[in-house]
Length: 177
Length: 177
DNA sequence: CAGCAAAGTTAGTGACCAGTCACTAAGTAA
DNA sequence: TTACTTAGTGACTGGTCACTAACTTTGCTG
Image (cartoon, rainbow over all chains, first blue to last red; front, side, top):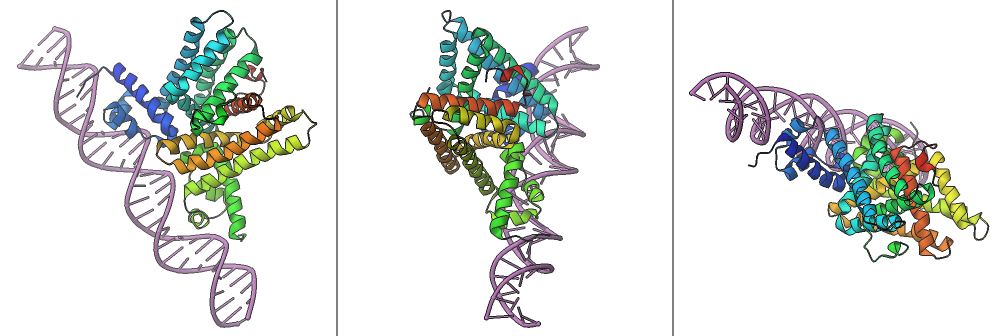
């Protein structure tokens, strides 16, 4: 048995939670499954986080944060006026390299809708704020043209959809990219 | 108590299921909730459909079918070369008029991913086939240019996302459309 | 109106699941 | 060594849920 500090454990819980929630969604993931992946007992999760929802929120926040980081890194190493291409290439890279991140995004979006429908507006607010940072980041990198930002993010969302649906890379639905 | 033919009841179950599944997703929706909305006892659902999954599949299929119908109707009443604008306007119309349909779509996409991850490939196949019909329909209406089709569907998927996230209509994330 | 099929119900079951509780073990500072 | 903190566990609980079985009601038809 490996002992870690609570902070380190929380970190591994977030990683495990992203994997599990991306696969099966909020309702479809048991805290047992997350605990098994982390390698601790299920009750111990509730020492590290107050509720299952708090685990999901932490995982969601991390996922959006890391996606923003992907864009930022891409723009950093790109020629001037090459931001669009660089970000698009970086997102494309995720399809094969980190589809988990794309599927977690989808799970976040539907989780917000469900929470909102259930009368919980706190969760939605938090996620909207995180997503807005993504939007603003992209918008800034694209010279502040909302039309371009919309077009770019739209393609990203279609990519998320096609990945979720499981269309293979050589399928004709990918031919328009 | 209103008695209906099994076929009529199945129809009302599908309508109710779309509403409930759109709100809370596959795992988050109880058959109890669907039955309550239909106005029958919960066990009776299992006379009309073999499993909960079968109800979801029927609802999903109907949702995609109806979305295709929205596009078809829009193109029908549009001037030549005006297909793109007409379909875009028709989809825009759904944001305010039938957001349920957009949210159900999102639920379908993540449900496919979950089923696939759980080893069930039948469900994914069925949905991919239905979605492909949508893609082909749009592609045909847009003159067979995959780039244009991708651009159009991409914006649709971004709309789905923004609706799920609950951004109000006057928010700047909508400014690029 | 008898009888029958189809529409519908009530009662129940086994499985699962988020969260609690009382406890043990391993470190640490004096 | 003693007093204290922190990491972690096993056993349990109240509740939910998909699905089954056995029964009742209702409209139709010869």
